[in-house]
Image (cartoon, rainbow, N blue to C red; front, side, top):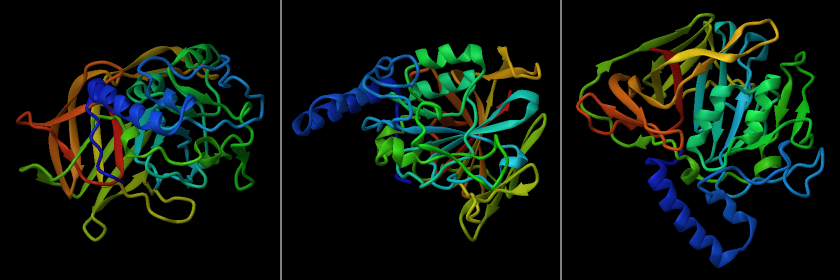
Length: 331
């Protein structure tokens, strides 16, 4: 993973101006839409763009990250494609369970999944990226209009069948997979990661940390430091997290970000309320890197900004180079 610094909307606008100048010298037309500062690419309100018919897969514009909602119940494990993600967000969903959002920019795996449904919180979280592509398998009926109106490219299996397929290794709904290259063509690169994260040398201080567990009402994440690999080994609900090929999932940095988790106006089919995770605002965090834990603060002034993390003395908090996991814990 390439070291990346996204410093919010101002930095994003500067990047877009530079990118636009380079693209103008080489191509014209639709590639420029990756640097729009406002809403998403024009479509017909159903996740299709002009000229795209049902079942036809459209390649995303240059500069767009790919975000995939990934199932995280026991029946969905082991998942596929987690190791290639630049950032993995872990959020609370109905019944106190968890779900993942994997964000890809520097590389695309051959397959990602199982793919599951989106949540209202995802729309706010994804505003930090420029016209992102969101791959998901559905949503609560009343949420679909909000997804259509959001500044992102919604990619649903019923209208992009060339990019999705059902596996025969497990029962539905835990067997829907995505072929990212059918959507993206190629990875957009590290400049698409406008998260606000900084990468570099570890700050002074911190405390030695061998293991950290974050608990949701009905789920838990445990991160155990491996001095040999210089990575945090992930376990979910007491079982080590490995990809379908048997490779351990091991981020370089883990962020436990304490946020407000409130009720929303949405419910699942069983009547359970859908939690809303607020990622705009400020609060406390713990950053795990290099076998140490650092107290930190986080701040995201608006939805279009990335999230800035600072050390206890107010200096920028550097992450270790590599994959980042962000677990949204209730403040």
